[in-house]
Length: 404
Ligand SMILES: [Zn+2]
Image (cartoon, rainbow, N blue to C red; front, side, top):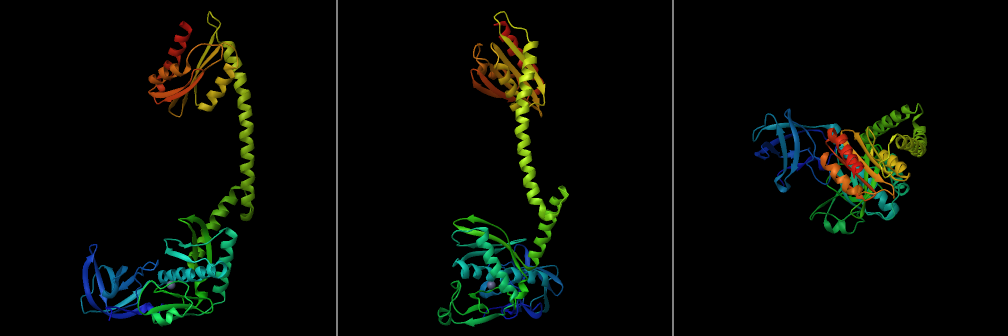
Protein backbone atom coordinates (compact mmCIF):
# COMPACT_ATOMS: atom_id res chain seq x y z
CA UNK A 1 0.00 0.00 0.00
CA UNK A 2 1.38 3.48 -0.93
CA UNK A 3 2.75 5.53 1.98
CA UNK A 4 0.41 8.45 1.43
CA UNK A 5 -3.34 8.30 0.83
CA UNK A 6 -4.02 10.97 -1.77
CA UNK A 7 -7.17 12.76 -0.72
CA UNK A 8 -7.12 15.06 -3.75
CA UNK A 9 -7.90 12.05 -5.98
CA UNK A 10 -11.44 11.80 -4.65
CA UNK A 11 -12.10 15.41 -3.58
CA UNK A 12 -10.42 18.30 -5.38
CA UNK A 13 -12.28 20.83 -3.22
CA UNK A 14 -10.99 19.51 0.10
CA UNK A 15 -8.73 22.24 1.48
CA UNK A 16 -8.50 21.34 5.17
CA UNK A 17 -7.51 17.91 6.44
CA UNK A 18 -5.96 16.10 9.40
CA UNK A 19 -3.10 13.63 9.07
CA UNK A 20 -0.19 12.03 10.89
CA UNK A 21 3.51 12.51 10.12
CA UNK A 22 5.05 9.17 9.10
CA UNK A 23 8.48 10.45 8.11
CA UNK A 24 10.65 13.57 8.20
CA UNK A 25 13.58 13.87 5.82
CA UNK A 26 16.31 16.44 5.18
CA UNK A 27 17.05 15.39 1.64
CA UNK A 28 15.30 18.09 -0.39
CA UNK A 29 17.93 20.79 -1.19
CA UNK A 30 18.62 21.57 2.44
CA UNK A 31 14.92 21.97 3.27
CA UNK A 32 12.95 19.59 5.42
CA UNK A 33 10.36 17.38 3.77
CA UNK A 34 7.47 15.77 5.63
CA UNK A 35 5.62 12.63 4.57
CA UNK A 36 2.05 12.20 5.83
CA UNK A 37 -0.24 9.17 6.00
CA UNK A 38 -2.82 11.15 3.99
CA UNK A 39 -2.70 14.45 2.14
CA UNK A 40 -4.86 16.85 0.17
CA UNK A 41 -1.74 18.54 -1.28
CA UNK A 42 -1.28 17.94 -5.00
CA UNK A 43 2.42 17.37 -5.89
CA UNK A 44 3.99 18.76 -9.11
CA UNK A 45 3.17 16.50 -12.06
CA UNK A 46 1.31 16.12 -15.33
CA UNK A 47 2.09 19.71 -16.35
CA UNK A 48 0.43 21.05 -13.19
CA UNK A 49 2.49 22.80 -10.47
CA UNK A 50 2.13 21.64 -6.86
CA UNK A 51 -0.15 23.08 -4.22
CA UNK A 52 1.16 25.31 -1.46
CA UNK A 53 -0.36 25.92 1.98
CA UNK A 54 0.38 25.18 5.64
CA UNK A 55 1.01 22.24 8.00
CA UNK A 56 0.27 23.24 11.60
CA UNK A 57 0.80 26.84 10.50
CA UNK A 58 4.24 26.28 8.88
CA UNK A 59 4.47 27.08 5.16
CA UNK A 60 4.42 24.22 2.66
CA UNK A 61 6.33 25.75 -0.25
CA UNK A 62 6.28 22.78 -2.60
CA UNK A 63 5.10 19.18 -2.84
CA UNK A 64 6.98 16.50 -4.71
CA UNK A 65 5.62 13.17 -5.90
CA UNK A 66 7.95 10.41 -4.65
CA UNK A 67 5.89 7.59 -6.18
CA UNK A 68 5.15 4.72 -3.77
CA UNK A 69 7.19 6.50 -1.07
CA UNK A 70 4.47 9.13 -0.86
CA UNK A 71 4.21 12.88 -1.25
CA UNK A 72 7.08 15.05 0.06
CA UNK A 73 5.80 18.26 1.67
CA UNK A 74 8.69 20.75 1.69
CA UNK A 75 8.23 22.80 4.86
CA UNK A 76 9.61 26.24 5.70
CA UNK A 77 9.64 26.98 9.46
CA UNK A 78 8.86 24.70 12.40
CA UNK A 79 8.69 21.06 11.25
CA UNK A 80 6.24 18.68 12.94
CA UNK A 81 7.91 15.59 14.47
CA UNK A 82 7.46 12.02 13.31
CA UNK A 83 4.21 10.61 14.69
CA UNK A 84 2.70 14.06 15.28
CA UNK A 85 -0.86 14.87 14.32
CA UNK A 86 -1.03 17.78 11.88
CA UNK A 87 -3.65 20.04 10.35
CA UNK A 88 -3.06 20.78 6.70
CA UNK A 89 -4.49 23.68 4.77
CA UNK A 90 -4.26 24.20 1.01
CA UNK A 91 -3.96 27.70 -0.55
CA UNK A 92 -7.39 27.69 -2.17
CA UNK A 93 -6.91 30.43 -4.80
CA UNK A 94 -3.81 28.69 -6.15
CA UNK A 95 -5.64 25.33 -6.20
CA UNK A 96 -8.66 26.90 -7.92
CA UNK A 97 -6.39 28.57 -10.47
CA UNK A 98 -4.64 25.27 -11.25
CA UNK A 99 -7.95 23.38 -11.49
CA UNK A 100 -9.30 25.99 -13.91
CA UNK A 101 -6.20 25.82 -16.12
CA UNK A 102 -6.00 22.04 -15.98
CA UNK A 103 -9.71 21.35 -16.54
CA UNK A 104 -9.72 24.08 -19.19
CA UNK A 105 -6.95 22.17 -20.94
CA UNK A 106 -9.02 18.95 -20.99
CA UNK A 107 -11.90 20.87 -22.58
CA UNK A 108 -9.80 22.80 -25.12
CA UNK A 109 -7.82 19.69 -26.10
CA UNK A 110 -11.05 17.73 -26.70
CA UNK A 111 -12.46 20.67 -28.70
CA UNK A 112 -9.49 20.37 -31.10
CA UNK A 113 -10.11 16.61 -31.37
CA UNK A 114 -13.87 17.03 -31.91
CA UNK A 115 -13.52 19.70 -34.60
CA UNK A 116 -10.23 18.87 -36.32
CA UNK A 117 -9.12 15.42 -35.05
CA UNK A 118 -6.07 17.27 -33.72
CA UNK A 119 -4.57 15.62 -30.60
CA UNK A 120 -2.72 17.51 -27.85
CA UNK A 121 0.87 16.27 -27.42
CA UNK A 122 1.88 18.18 -24.29
CA UNK A 123 0.60 20.66 -21.71
CA UNK A 124 2.24 23.11 -19.30
CA UNK A 125 0.92 25.52 -16.69
CA UNK A 126 3.26 28.53 -16.83
CA UNK A 127 3.53 31.49 -14.45
CA UNK A 128 0.73 33.54 -16.04
CA UNK A 129 -0.64 31.40 -18.85
CA UNK A 130 -0.66 27.81 -20.14
CA UNK A 131 0.60 26.08 -23.27
CA UNK A 132 -0.63 23.10 -25.26
CA UNK A 133 1.19 21.64 -28.25
CA UNK A 134 -1.42 20.47 -30.75
CA UNK A 135 -0.89 18.36 -33.86
CA UNK A 136 -3.06 20.64 -35.99
CA UNK A 137 -2.85 20.76 -39.78
CA UNK A 138 -3.52 24.11 -41.51
CA UNK A 139 -3.67 26.30 -38.41
CA UNK A 140 -5.07 29.82 -38.52
CA UNK A 141 -6.48 32.21 -35.96
CA UNK A 142 -9.99 31.45 -37.28
CA UNK A 143 -9.50 27.68 -36.89
CA UNK A 144 -8.18 28.09 -33.35
CA UNK A 145 -11.00 30.47 -32.41
CA UNK A 146 -13.53 27.85 -33.49
CA UNK A 147 -12.06 25.43 -30.93
CA UNK A 148 -12.06 28.19 -28.29
CA UNK A 149 -15.73 28.85 -29.01
CA UNK A 150 -16.66 25.19 -28.63
CA UNK A 151 -14.64 24.98 -25.40
CA UNK A 152 -16.45 28.00 -23.93
CA UNK A 153 -19.83 26.58 -24.91
CA UNK A 154 -18.96 23.38 -23.03
CA UNK A 155 -17.91 25.49 -20.02
CA UNK A 156 -21.15 27.48 -20.02
CA UNK A 157 -23.27 24.34 -20.40
CA UNK A 158 -21.94 23.60 -16.89
CA UNK A 159 -21.52 19.88 -17.58
CA UNK A 160 -20.69 17.52 -14.71
CA UNK A 161 -17.16 16.14 -14.35
CA UNK A 162 -16.76 12.70 -12.78
CA UNK A 163 -13.92 10.39 -11.78
CA UNK A 164 -13.88 6.64 -12.57
CA UNK A 165 -11.30 4.16 -11.38
CA UNK A 166 -11.05 1.31 -13.90
CA UNK A 167 -8.83 -1.67 -14.71
CA UNK A 168 -6.61 -1.53 -17.82
CA UNK A 169 -8.95 -4.13 -19.43
CA UNK A 170 -11.98 -1.92 -18.83
CA UNK A 171 -10.06 1.10 -20.09
CA UNK A 172 -9.11 -0.67 -23.33
CA UNK A 173 -12.84 -0.90 -24.21
CA UNK A 174 -13.38 2.84 -23.70
CA UNK A 175 -12.93 5.73 -26.18
CA UNK A 176 -10.13 7.49 -24.31
CA UNK A 177 -8.80 10.77 -25.74
CA UNK A 178 -5.19 9.75 -25.00
CA UNK A 179 -3.35 6.55 -24.13
CA UNK A 180 -2.74 5.98 -20.43
CA UNK A 181 0.85 6.86 -19.48
CA UNK A 182 0.90 4.32 -16.60
CA UNK A 183 0.18 0.71 -15.85
CA UNK A 184 -2.32 -0.77 -13.41
CA UNK A 185 -5.58 0.77 -12.26
CA UNK A 186 -6.48 3.93 -14.12
CA UNK A 187 -8.18 7.12 -13.04
CA UNK A 188 -10.41 8.44 -15.79
CA UNK A 189 -11.82 11.96 -15.90
CA UNK A 190 -15.13 12.23 -17.70
CA UNK A 191 -16.69 15.48 -18.86
CA UNK A 192 -20.30 14.51 -19.39
CA UNK A 193 -20.95 13.73 -23.05
CA UNK A 194 -17.75 15.42 -24.22
CA UNK A 195 -14.42 13.98 -23.01
CA UNK A 196 -12.95 10.90 -21.37
CA UNK A 197 -9.25 10.79 -20.55
CA UNK A 198 -6.89 9.24 -17.99
CA UNK A 199 -5.43 11.85 -15.61
CA UNK A 200 -4.10 12.13 -12.05
CA UNK A 201 -4.59 15.88 -11.61
CA UNK A 202 -7.10 18.03 -9.76
CA UNK A 203 -10.22 19.01 -11.72
CA UNK A 204 -13.30 21.16 -11.34
CA UNK A 205 -16.56 19.40 -10.33
CA UNK A 206 -18.47 21.04 -13.17
CA UNK A 207 -17.24 22.73 -16.34
CA UNK A 208 -18.79 26.05 -15.27
CA UNK A 209 -16.14 26.36 -12.58
CA UNK A 210 -13.52 26.92 -15.32
CA UNK A 211 -15.20 30.27 -16.07
CA UNK A 212 -13.91 30.84 -19.56
CA UNK A 213 -11.00 30.14 -21.92
CA UNK A 214 -9.16 32.60 -24.15
CA UNK A 215 -6.21 32.06 -26.49
CA UNK A 216 -3.50 34.69 -26.15
CA UNK A 217 -1.34 33.65 -29.09
CA UNK A 218 -0.13 30.68 -31.15
CA UNK A 219 2.97 29.72 -33.13
CA UNK A 220 4.53 26.81 -34.98
CA UNK A 221 6.98 24.89 -32.78
CA UNK A 222 8.79 21.64 -33.57
CA UNK A 223 6.22 20.46 -36.11
CA UNK A 224 3.30 21.19 -33.77
CA UNK A 225 1.16 24.23 -33.05
CA UNK A 226 1.95 25.78 -29.66
CA UNK A 227 -1.12 27.52 -28.29
CA UNK A 228 -0.89 29.85 -25.30
CA UNK A 229 -4.18 30.07 -23.44
CA UNK A 230 -5.62 31.32 -20.16
CA UNK A 231 -8.64 30.03 -18.22
CA UNK A 232 -10.76 31.33 -15.33
CA UNK A 233 -8.93 33.71 -12.98
CA UNK A 234 -6.10 34.05 -15.49
CA UNK A 235 -8.47 34.95 -18.33
CA UNK A 236 -9.82 37.85 -16.26
CA UNK A 237 -6.31 38.99 -15.27
CA UNK A 238 -5.23 38.83 -18.90
CA UNK A 239 -8.32 40.75 -20.06
CA UNK A 240 -7.57 43.50 -17.53
CA UNK A 241 -3.98 43.75 -18.75
CA UNK A 242 -4.94 43.73 -22.43
CA UNK A 243 -7.68 46.30 -21.84
CA UNK A 244 -5.24 48.58 -19.98
CA UNK A 245 -2.70 48.39 -22.86
CA UNK A 246 -5.38 49.02 -25.46
CA UNK A 247 -6.78 51.99 -23.54
CA UNK A 248 -3.32 53.50 -23.02
CA UNK A 249 -2.63 53.28 -26.74
CA UNK A 250 -6.07 54.75 -27.55
CA UNK A 251 -5.39 57.65 -25.14
CA UNK A 252 -2.32 58.59 -27.22
CA UNK A 253 -4.72 59.14 -30.12
CA UNK A 254 -7.39 60.71 -27.88
CA UNK A 255 -9.66 58.01 -29.27
CA UNK A 256 -11.89 55.20 -28.04
CA UNK A 257 -10.23 51.82 -27.36
CA UNK A 258 -11.58 50.03 -30.42
CA UNK A 259 -10.62 52.86 -32.81
CA UNK A 260 -6.91 52.67 -31.92
CA UNK A 261 -5.79 49.92 -34.36
CA UNK A 262 -6.84 51.79 -37.53
CA UNK A 263 -5.51 55.10 -36.14
CA UNK A 264 -2.14 53.44 -35.43
CA UNK A 265 -2.08 51.93 -38.94
CA UNK A 266 -2.92 55.35 -40.39
CA UNK A 267 -0.11 56.96 -38.41
CA UNK A 268 2.43 54.39 -39.63
CA UNK A 269 1.36 55.08 -43.23
CA UNK A 270 1.72 58.84 -42.70
CA UNK A 271 5.11 58.27 -41.15
CA UNK A 272 6.29 56.30 -44.19
CA UNK A 273 5.09 59.07 -46.47
CA UNK A 274 6.92 61.67 -44.37
CA UNK A 275 10.12 59.64 -44.61
CA UNK A 276 9.77 59.56 -48.38
CA UNK A 277 9.33 63.34 -48.46
CA UNK A 278 12.27 63.89 -46.13
CA UNK A 279 14.51 61.79 -48.39
CA UNK A 280 13.53 63.91 -51.40
CA UNK A 281 14.08 67.15 -49.48
CA UNK A 282 17.46 65.91 -48.20
CA UNK A 283 18.58 65.28 -51.77
CA UNK A 284 17.53 68.79 -52.78
CA UNK A 285 19.29 70.24 -49.73
CA UNK A 286 22.45 68.26 -50.52
CA UNK A 287 22.50 69.68 -54.06
CA UNK A 288 22.18 73.25 -52.77
CA UNK A 289 24.80 72.65 -50.07
CA UNK A 290 27.16 71.08 -52.63
CA UNK A 291 26.81 74.19 -54.85
CA UNK A 292 27.82 76.41 -51.94
CA UNK A 293 30.79 74.27 -50.87
CA UNK A 294 31.95 73.99 -54.47
CA UNK A 295 31.78 77.78 -54.93
CA UNK A 296 33.78 78.36 -51.73
CA UNK A 297 36.57 75.96 -52.71
CA UNK A 298 39.64 77.16 -54.64
CA UNK A 299 40.78 74.83 -57.42
CA UNK A 300 44.36 73.51 -57.50
CA UNK A 301 46.66 74.42 -60.40
CA UNK A 302 45.37 71.44 -62.42
CA UNK A 303 41.75 72.47 -61.88
CA UNK A 304 40.81 69.95 -59.13
CA UNK A 305 38.59 71.12 -56.27
CA UNK A 306 39.21 69.28 -52.97
CA UNK A 307 36.18 69.94 -50.75
CA UNK A 308 37.00 68.97 -47.15
CA UNK A 309 34.55 69.56 -44.30
CA UNK A 310 33.84 68.13 -40.84
CA UNK A 311 30.28 68.43 -39.53
CA UNK A 312 28.57 67.72 -36.22
CA UNK A 313 25.76 65.18 -35.87
CA UNK A 314 25.44 64.02 -39.48
CA UNK A 315 25.01 60.31 -40.11
CA UNK A 316 26.71 58.33 -42.89
CA UNK A 317 23.65 58.57 -45.12
CA UNK A 318 23.65 62.32 -44.98
CA UNK A 319 27.40 62.49 -45.69
CA UNK A 320 26.98 60.15 -48.67
CA UNK A 321 24.16 62.27 -50.14
CA UNK A 322 26.36 65.36 -49.93
CA UNK A 323 29.35 63.48 -51.42
CA UNK A 324 27.22 62.28 -54.35
CA UNK A 325 25.96 65.81 -54.98
CA UNK A 326 29.55 67.11 -54.94
CA UNK A 327 31.06 64.55 -57.33
CA UNK A 328 28.22 65.14 -59.77
CA UNK A 329 30.44 68.12 -60.67
CA UNK A 330 33.59 67.59 -62.72
CA UNK A 331 37.10 67.49 -61.24
CA UNK A 332 35.89 67.29 -57.63
CA UNK A 333 37.04 65.34 -54.60
CA UNK A 334 34.85 65.28 -51.49
CA UNK A 335 36.45 64.54 -48.09
CA UNK A 336 33.64 64.64 -45.54
CA UNK A 337 33.62 63.83 -41.84
CA UNK A 338 31.11 63.97 -39.00
CA UNK A 339 31.16 63.76 -35.22
CA UNK A 340 28.07 61.60 -34.80
CA UNK A 341 27.04 60.44 -31.30
CA UNK A 342 30.62 60.00 -30.12
CA UNK A 343 31.77 58.31 -33.33
CA UNK A 344 33.94 59.74 -36.10
CA UNK A 345 32.34 59.06 -39.51
CA UNK A 346 34.08 59.54 -42.86
CA UNK A 347 33.03 59.51 -46.51
CA UNK A 348 35.54 60.16 -49.34
CA UNK A 349 34.51 60.34 -53.00
CA UNK A 350 35.80 61.69 -56.31
CA UNK A 351 34.34 62.46 -59.72
CA UNK A 352 35.35 60.17 -62.61
CA UNK A 353 37.79 62.73 -64.01
CA UNK A 354 39.69 63.28 -60.73
CA UNK A 355 42.65 61.13 -59.70
CA UNK A 356 43.29 59.35 -56.38
CA UNK A 357 42.39 56.10 -54.61
CA UNK A 358 39.72 56.97 -52.03
CA UNK A 359 39.96 53.51 -50.47
CA UNK A 360 43.69 53.91 -49.68
CA UNK A 361 43.16 57.46 -48.42
CA UNK A 362 40.29 56.25 -46.24
CA UNK A 363 42.47 53.62 -44.58
CA UNK A 364 45.09 56.30 -43.81
CA UNK A 365 42.45 58.59 -42.28
CA UNK A 366 40.87 55.78 -40.29
CA UNK A 367 44.24 54.89 -38.76
CA UNK A 368 44.27 58.40 -37.22
CA UNK A 369 40.78 58.04 -35.68
CA UNK A 370 41.43 54.52 -34.35
CA UNK A 371 38.96 52.93 -36.71
CA UNK A 372 38.48 51.05 -39.94
CA UNK A 373 37.27 51.80 -43.42
CA UNK A 374 37.56 51.08 -47.11
CA UNK A 375 35.66 50.90 -50.37
CA UNK A 376 36.32 51.51 -54.02
CA UNK A 377 38.83 53.84 -55.73
CA UNK A 378 36.08 56.45 -56.33
CA UNK A 379 34.03 56.05 -53.11
CA UNK A 380 34.95 54.89 -49.63
CA UNK A 381 33.60 55.14 -46.11
CA UNK A 382 34.84 54.48 -42.61
CA UNK A 383 34.76 55.50 -39.01
CA UNK A 384 36.52 55.36 -35.67
CA UNK A 385 36.17 56.15 -32.01
CA UNK A 386 38.79 58.92 -31.74
CA UNK A 387 36.52 61.88 -32.53
CA UNK A 388 39.18 64.39 -31.38
CA UNK A 389 41.47 63.59 -34.31
CA UNK A 390 38.76 63.62 -36.99
CA UNK A 391 39.57 67.18 -38.18
CA UNK A 392 43.27 66.36 -38.38
CA UNK A 393 42.56 63.16 -40.34
CA UNK A 394 40.46 64.96 -42.98
CA UNK A 395 42.90 67.92 -43.22
CA UNK A 396 45.97 65.74 -43.69
CA UNK A 397 44.35 63.83 -46.60
CA UNK A 398 43.23 67.14 -48.15
CA UNK A 399 46.69 68.68 -47.82
CA UNK A 400 48.27 65.58 -49.38
CA UNK A 401 45.93 65.79 -52.37
CA UNK A 402 46.43 69.52 -52.91
CA UNK A 403 50.21 69.16 -52.81
CA UNK A 404 50.38 66.13 -55.12
ZN1 LIG B 1 -6.43 16.29 -15.82
